[in-house]
Image (cartoon, rainbow, N blue to C red; front, side, top):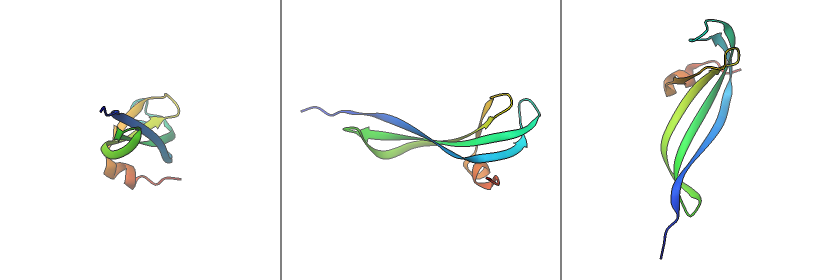
Length: 77
């Protein structure tokens, strides 16, 4: 008997916020994304292993990590 297991990451777009970019300093749209990595068994996602939030600037394209609390606090529009 053998088992097929692995990890799968799913990226969902949480929203867009107008804010000042941490890298370039311009006020532009910032895309907030949520990345969830789950342990899979026989291609069925079972257990969430890691959750990350990122903020990507639409002006310069830089992507920064954001804490979960900060991602929830941002006024998504």
